[in-house]
Image (tube, rainbow, N blue to C red; front, side, top):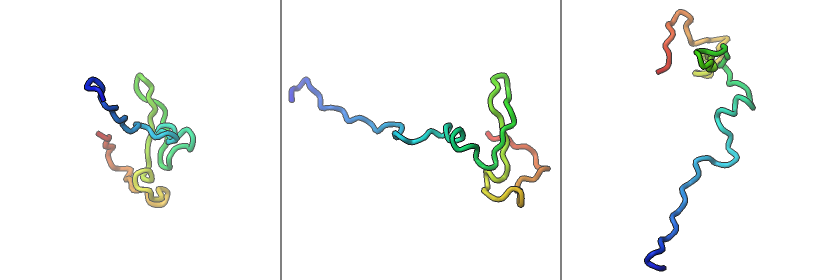
Length: 78
């Protein structure tokens, strides 16, 4: 090998695995997850808004045992 030539640099692994779906495409093909509901849009940019029930965070039957107390204050996520 000449002094001027460098050995080939190995290529990094791809960031996306081919044939793997994107997370934002899943609701379009499979529908919303249980426990999530649309409430329209919010703000000047009209971003989608929604609400969740206890089922989305705990996986329990919300009709039978809703773990969220309706009297509890709303605590927005950070």
